[in-house]
Image 1 (cartoon, rainbow, N blue to C red):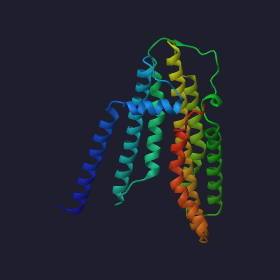
Image 2: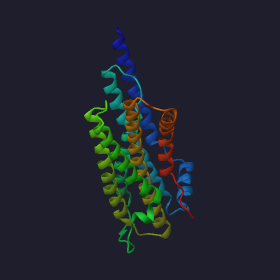
Image 3: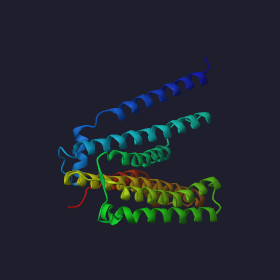
Image 4: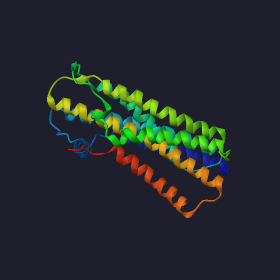
Length: 266
């Protein structure tokens, strides 16, 4: 048996294992701890009326985010294996998770099974999304586009494909977030009790936080990649710049996690 055949068999086994583990995690019951964490972050009191609503939301979002993550990683591993590369790509993983999160928000609309009612109060991003999320998204997008222009203008070693990806991210991600955010804000709301309505608003708030934080994180990864290209092109990288970029590689996922899980201010 050749080494290539053995590697292919191991790859297939790992992919199957990843799919099985993800399926088990996605279909596992939502734990009480997850519900309590969600309630604490959103300042929501869990009652008999809204408990099932919150559990259903957490289950749907976990299922689709996990599916997106595994799908993207599977695609990357298969493509990388064809080039005899073994590893994990954070950008692919986060992109898949982001796509899964978007699909989950579409599916959440079907969770409202009771009679629906129109809201007399206009829903806006200012009401549901922290200011830092609203400011960072366009800021990260503009930075990504500006650096893409600089990289292209300096004729760096970056291929035209990389620049095109950065431009597409800088324009496309904010546009997608805007469309999904509009869908979240206009999503029908249940009518029953005050507890259910409060849970509905908490779910909208959490959805907007996750979607915007994911897009911001992807854009920041693009920015880090662009800085690395510029530093390598200049060949005058100082210790301060290198340290800054290395910190950014660690700080980016932490920033995304904090933005997605920010607590509601009292």
